[in-house]
Amino acid sequence: MPPAALSVHLSIGQAYAWSVFKPPLESALHLDGTQSALPFQLAIVMLGLSAAFGGTFVERNGPRWAMTVALICFSSGFLISALGAQTQQFWLIVLGYGFVGGIGLGIGYISPVSTLIKWFPDRPGMATGIAIMGFGGGALIASPWSAQMLDSFGTGHSGIALAFLVHGLAYAVFMSLGVFLVRVPRTAKPVADAPSAFEGVQVSARSAVRTPQFWCLWIVLCMNVTAGIGILEKAAPMITDFFADTSTPVSVSAAAGFVALLSAANMAGRIGWSSASDLIGRKNIYRVYLGVGALMYLLIALFGDTAKPLFVLCALVILSFYGGGFATIPAYLKDLFGTYQVGAIHGRLLTAWSTAGVLGPLIVNWIADRQESAGKHGSSLYTLSFSIMIGLLVVGFIANEFVRPVNARHHHVPAPREAADAQRQQPA
Image (cartoon, rainbow, N blue to C red):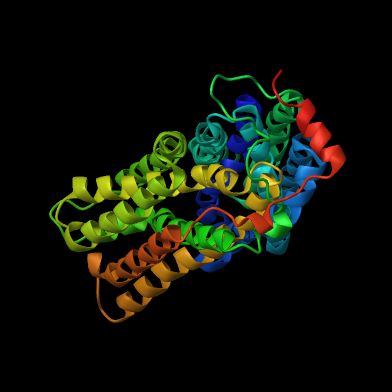
């Protein structure tokens, strides 16, 4: 199961490497920075929406169906984008990569979650962390690979089209491994002192969205993602601005290396922190994400421009929390709502990601632009936005404190056939 999940998540994780295509697209199709970001922004929005609306179908039809849909949509998105680049029709790239590919992102992202939890009921945080780690690490593969293709094919519209075409075909082959490998456990694995995947509280997706716990976790995820993506989306220019007025400015290559480090921290946090949540509990680990994350932002705002190691260390910690928050949330949902429809519940919760994907970059970029227009420069461009991020993390911390066990009136009472199916899947 972990290789099946990774084959999908390492593929759709290419979304974090979209910035590689921005400069050549802007040059070849005469776009500005806002326009070239549109396919990525739409893809993130569609990720949340398709996960929300498709989560129930994933639960109903199983992970193989979901991975097949993700394969078709994600690969087709690249093929449509290739046509758009070749014909110099930017709207086709937006349609392909943003809309169609974004649907593949959402369905693919949630496809292995509930299945992994059922395979590893004793370590749900680690299990989902292994899969979702791939989404954070996908850019480590896609960034150099895409850059090499553009160097080989050229950065004109034909070269970009050929790169998109190769992406679409290669990812179709790689994601098919997940389709062939994925299995739903017929019998829960007997593990000493481990809970069955079917024991405990079970809440349907329809009932879950009516509980205060769901909306508290929605706020928690949205605040955590907003804080992380605010740095991730503007990482290279941010570190350059912070040290532009010092005796040791940051070079372009060093800024690119900083972005690679952030991707590594994002990936490591997904498996490391989510595994830690199995030991110390989900609520406690989110106290770390949100509380320590606010402290890291405060240190950057106050002292970040005085020492590069401090700036880099704090940013790496924030990005590890960003990744860890994504990987831990499915296990948190499982603890509160059970495994009955955890994939569908997770999909609905990912609308918080769609919101944060717009909110985080908007806060950082809009404020930085206004500060620059006012004549400010260096770290002062980001002081206000970092203060806002601290406030958002505090809001998320408070929301996490309100999370309590789900009231019994929301518990799902299985029909006779469901109960019999669950009983057959209990360990002997």
